[in-house]
Length: 252
Image (cartoon, rainbow, N blue to C red; front, side, top):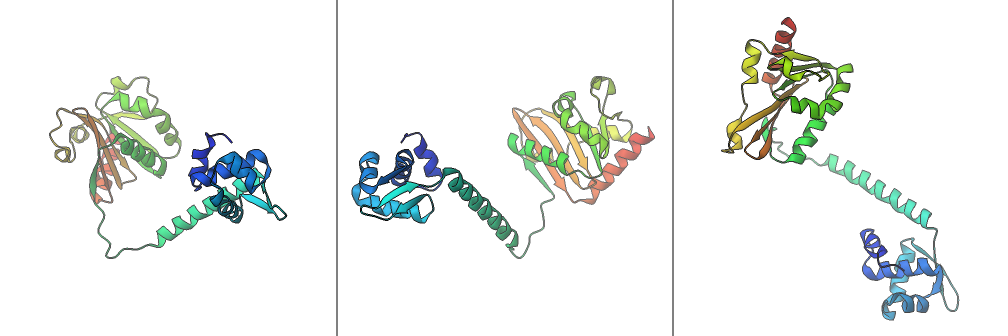
């Protein structure tokens, strides 16, 4: 038995005595309760209870006799069964959660703020993954496109993609469909949605605003030392803005 394996076995739901007994039996292959007690150091008064419980849960086998012996079962088979049971339990739990319903349902929040880096990155990945038809990226910083170019570029073959910037010459070398803003689109680039919600965090620097399929809105800014995102969805104004921007940049 090696002490290093005990935490891993405990993660499978064994207590410390059970983990000691099981790892000891794996090392011995086959042994009596007395042998296992002497090697593992588990109190003799607990040995039979633990061995019987491990046998009931399918970790070990029992050979009746005088004295009774215990032997390890094939490790691959044991752990394949554990994995299958765990996956089945996860699926059953997921389906059960889907059936839960709390009434009355509250209307969804139209806009909210993300304040953690992990949440922002996760939402960006989600937007790029679920876009179906069109995306408009109002980009304020070449660094944003450089960072995400590898996951934006494949979208160009599947959707109508428009990257709108203030000055196109600042984005030379970025191989994406880039359009330079004109007229009212410039005004949109200068508008910060709901930035007062972030609070007095110092100078605000814009990264981007993203409009997806006429229903999702996502804007990222840095304020002071923090990075924040404004998220909105299912509002008619989002569809109107996206259509207007596309019409204007295509006309130009």
